[in-house]
Image (cartoon, rainbow, N blue to C red; front, side, top):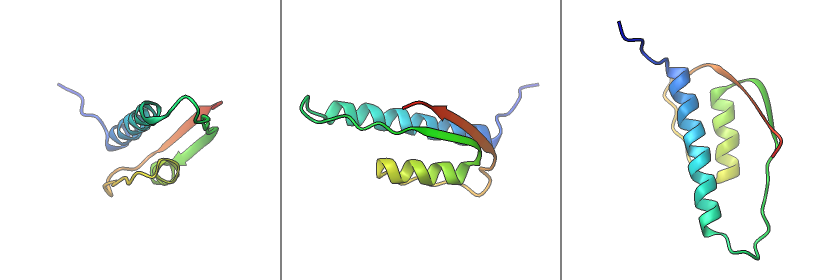
Length: 79
């Protein structure tokens, strides 16, 4: 039998891909004279909607999460 991916896992993939895509788009639009901005993230056992809100505020992008997307995630990023 095939194993189905849980809604929380799908949510994590969506948030991760959105972060990556936003970073690529920002880099493509930056000039060499524009200083880089880095964000340090240290989330331990945080709910996915809280993480999506944080990323939304940083990137200026909107995220729509289904009610069934639930779960907790830990992210440790030095920059």
